[in-house]
Amino acid sequence: MLEMIDYAVTGYEPLADVRLVVFPEFGHAAPIFSTAIELLEHLAVPIPNRHTDRYVHKAKKHNIYIQGSSPEFVGE
Image (cartoon, rainbow, N blue to C red; front, side, top):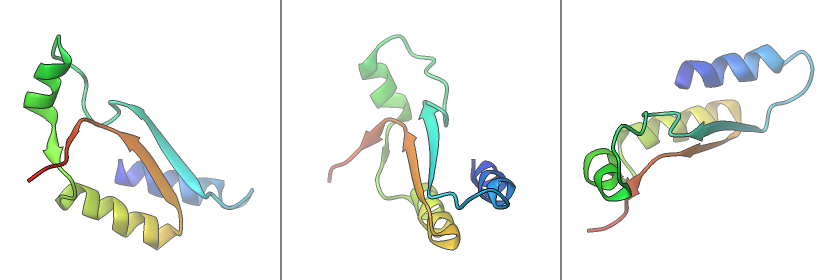
């Protein structure tokens, strides 16, 4: 996904500035579970984490916003 961000930003550079990169729902992981509860149990992760930190770094590098969708657990 990080490589795709680089390609989108640099590939569009001659035409205009990229300000937002958007990934589809479950672009990071295919929903292979039959219920939302199972998705949360198996795919949810605490936020922030080492993966989201990499997106923050990439967004700052390119001066863009990144929108993605994935199950997340925000808690204690």
